[in-house]
Length: 522
Image 1 (cartoon, helix red, strand yellow):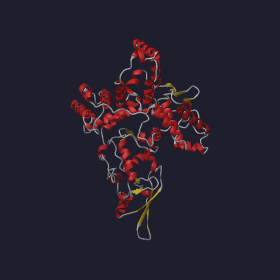
Image 2 (cartoon, rainbow, N blue to C red):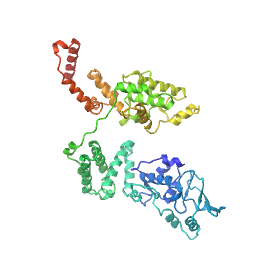
Image 3 (tube, rainbow, N blue to C red):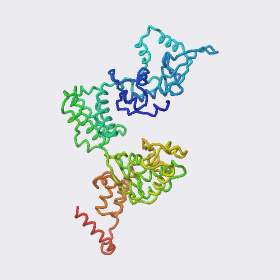
Image 4 (cartoon, helix red, strand yellow):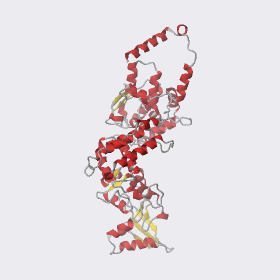
């Protein structure tokens, strides 16, 4: 139990009901109620109870970090679930040891734990237990004692526990239901914008929003777009998304009961002048390896252990199909078709951008990339994996397969995070000055398109194979030259131009004519 809640870190901006927590944590509703008695802060005092993700994360972190030295009166530290808990008084018993110290025993109230807990008690603890056993003590008094201290006693936090209480949370919970039509990442980005608006307006209830509040938020965005402070500055893209997401939120908000009296032009006060966008600093160039460098590092990746071979396959398939980290980590074995040299991106199963299904042909790159993935699939099949099992199983699943305990199980699901992809790229470039991200593979493949002598049709097919409906998407966002590469190009252009008639071959002349014809066709 100690690691169970610790691993279940919730999204801090989201709002959860008791039913949601029962599903997420795998506990019963009574357990959540006991958390409230132990100090978990609710969003408000209304029922059904709602909780902000940040409050739950802070509550569990506090109980994990609380040591025996800062336990409250009547509180025990459970050695099994590693939580600070208030036991049920009916389970508490005591005994005086040989040294005259009073030892108390009890049962951990966490229903998923129920371990025996002990404590050398102080007079304050014993007074607390006497109060609970007093028949004149009411249930209300017990609740007051259990919640007299905030959830974050004993640790330092950036936000006071009172800030977890927010009357907007009930409205946001309703909006989350409406936002179910979006992907999870999109919902998270909307919530980040909504919470930023809350922060700027000092947690003002949305039912009281004025145009002046929205204008203030707009002015903050303008400041953060143009500031020289790197820690405070927002990019043009981020500001644009904040404006777009809040505009959509306002459109939904003014249709809700109790909010129809809000000004209908709230979104208009978010619009920023074009001049402000123009002053935004450009994004730093996205570094990516050349295809030659990527192939060299791929060949040099270690393959001594099964995890190292998995890392090499992950690194290789990122280039072989120009795949995003979230897409490749959710692939199944059946999605890798070695006979047809294709990767099947089935959006009903894998996480694909915009839910796009696509049969991706292997890009014509060095064989070391396809060979690494093919060898990995063969190894998986030898271990008993196949079909709808994850193409890149977790460490635990691989360990089970090596001990022969994988047979007969339901399909092995993909890993939930892209950490293995990030680690694979880190391992590939370990010991070098390079720090490329998994997304750099797409830039490498896009740049390779421009290195090859392709027709306009071939360039379009190359972009389409990357998942881009239009070639200009590839050109606009991927594989851009670095400043040093541009400088080298112009240094070469400044060299004396060779005489056309003496230095240019017939083959080069035909190539120039072909390029001119292609340009005339556009």
